[in-house]
Length: 122
Image 1 (cartoon, helix red, strand yellow):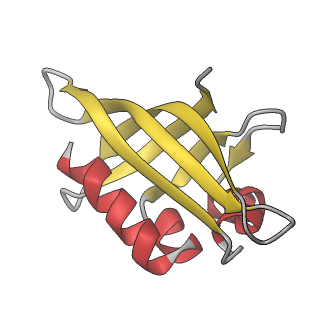
Image 2 (cartoon, one colour; image 1 turned 180 degrees about the horizontal axis):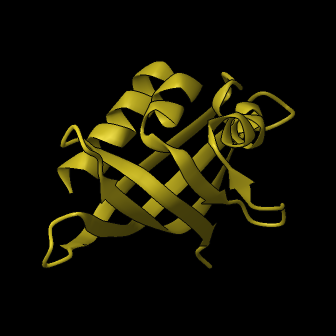
């Protein structure tokens, strides 16, 4: 849970760099409606439009987490919101999401994202 919360804080503070630093070098992201992104360069290409737009905010909070008995794999599940200032400049548009993040403990002991997927939460 704390790894996921730190991921959210770091992304909120550092944008795309905070997002990418949480991923393992060979991490996967499964963006809705797009091909799977494998590795940080591909993930950057997918996330730059969202995380570099100053009118858009992505926030999330994990609801639950579990770690394998071996202590090297885990996952978090939670809810996210994306808010964006609309084209008129006054209205704010919200989207609700749910997500699953698979974490893998690295050799240095840090948890990094092995795979991440988010989807609309009607």
